[in-house]
Length: 126
Image (cartoon, rainbow, N blue to C red; front, side, top):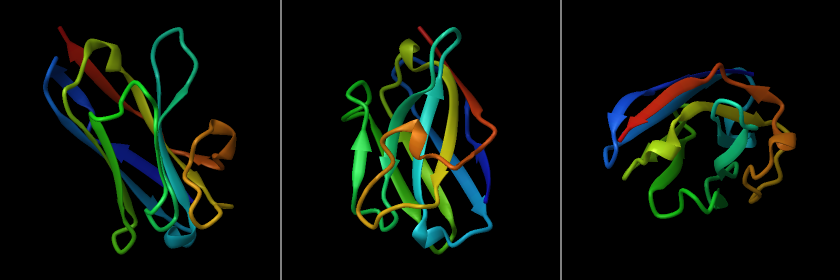
């Protein structure tokens, strides 16, 4: 499974960005997906996860109400809509794939991830 993330950039606080992750290989409808982020000097952390069908969702407390994860199984894409961005959201964002996913279980932990994308940088200025 190959993952290609894009959509990062520089945005002012309060602004919005939409990240996209294109996948190839594997059977996308059987893969749970997650977005993670890693700020300088910090560990990689979960931002949002989505189950195979999209029916199971998970969000980090820090992004609840601001970020929305979604997927399009026909296009083999997963998205992260980020609104009301804050400077503390600045990080490299990675998409990850759990190819051993259980039907309604979203990605919650990095240990679930079998494949990672290359990361896309999001910088939020104050």
